[in-house]
Image (tube, rainbow, N blue to C red):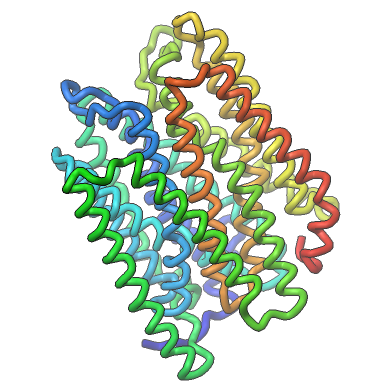
Length: 496
């Protein structure tokens, strides 16, 4: 394998809306991957809680919420080894392709009408997404030279690709899954990933050398350590799968019990990873401070995603059970409301990208944008708590409650998510860029896990109180971030 390092600038510099031509290749593979993921996600908790008579799994909300939280968390948790694998062994380009193959196979497993195939499909999607997600974003960062002022705007355009797929998916996959057949909906999600892989293969030439080669080991000793780490990782993964599979087959391990153990494992993974990254390594004082900032951003993002990602759990259940899903006499499936956030992203992402560029030197710093994102998120749930009050009598409420909530969540997302992606590529030392991006996605893992577990309280907690508490946490976190912004900026060592 050629271990030549990536070039600083890959492909033509203005081939895609004034951005590197390779951005289009990553844009479209991410679009189709998100079509696959969000199409499946729009159906997941509804399918698990639907009765067996209607083709669902017939699980109670508590069990379904535990599975949902563990699955969506694991999708992002596997970004950490996915980033390491790309950095050290395969390179980002190959890792993205292999991950896409796993995802497609997993979706087709969900399309099969067997319970065992359903769980195996979830496992394949977890493995595939962990390989694809962090490395697609890392490739985007590699398309820009250091100091290129277009970087943040480029990530906002990239984010439009993500949300184009996320918008179309619930409309197509959600309709087919809820109105025709659950398994056919999952099959359509798999087909989307196949289309994305075909495009990615033919568009690779526009990427130049970006993400093509792993970082070569510094010496022979490091090469041996990498091989040993790979073997131990594969052995550990196989051992976990065998133990969990055996206990589940014997009826000893329940989904809720497995989810509880997974949560403990996730917590130790986060603590151990950041401890190893920040305290270990031969970092300069500036690098160490910047790595500490990535941890602060991780905490803020974990809180954000724990609330935002309830879109697929508590908010999806609210849409299905408490919302009047019709407009002007036209009835639509509850899963269609999953497309609202993505539609707002498509509409407002260019606006925010323009605003960041237009502000120039007055552009708010990354921590200030994080604070704005958290406050907007909390305000959205404050609105939804009033919608929950209106539905407390058992009457279905207007979909405008959810639409207004999604609007504020979209503002929060645009202030935090693309900014966070860009900040990671600027704060991370070059030799661990993929690893740090994988750790950024660990915030999604932590947030998705907490959000899924909150769904377990959907039937046992008064909804106005549940949504009200979530709103309070978001607002308080945003205010704390705003107060800490000057201190965080000092630690960033000139990075904005």
